[in-house]
Image (cartoon, rainbow, N blue to C red; front, side, top):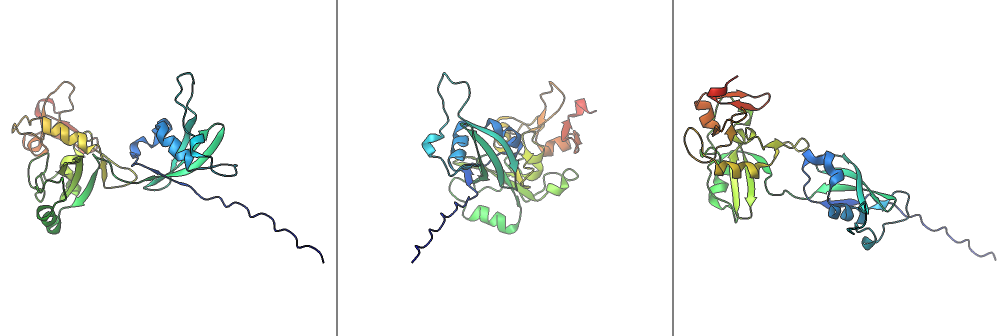
Length: 258
């Protein structure tokens, strides 16, 4: 009786690794090669080497921080956005390439998410706001109610929408979307429409500046003339006769209208 033939060893199935990472500012996708060593090491730890037999040990791919070495052990080589929330990243570690997917896992502070102003939304704000949120329905920039459009004839497609922005753990601000888009810091995420970056710095700057017209805080709309200190609320800028260019998002005060 012939012995049974030994079964060939099962081939290892390669899985597409998913690297968990913090929310990535889409305006910095091109700068991901300069990502921190910690992020790169975590990515490589979860990856399967291209052409390799399996994932390396986590302690074997930690980036080197020795003072005498010229280059870090782990280096991000390239990145390619896949969709709204994921990017494919290639990492080089000790001569081997690792490939995986970086995912957005949460929103950091200063990211504003556009929300439509409805009766239900206003009632939810006033009824039981979560811990650390202000139950006020007033815009943190122009100091008017969220349900009232601050201006007409400028960015009308943004009317009746607002952004909720987590500034700190115990400070959440709400801002008219019309007011937000005229802040020079504010940039909409090109991969996730409705997400607006850098709103935290914009609100902080506005609360530190007083409007040239009404002398109240919250002014973020400044004149684009170099050296001009004029800064206004969006509502005051319109009433004062400032010039707006919706193509370039530039504003000129009455003394410097072009």
